[in-house]
Length: 64
Image (cartoon, rainbow, N blue to C red):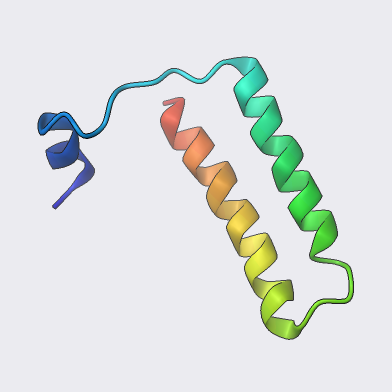
């Protein structure tokens, strides 16, 4: 099932992110990237930036 199918079913609603919402997400991304430089396991060092990247990517997709 695609995201378009979800939208047609009414499970997704269009949303235009505000500058404040985007800035808040990027503050979290910056924090997670900084945290990933701390003493974490190899898995943690991989997944923390990967999660931050996913969050940033989702924000950009929402604002298209």
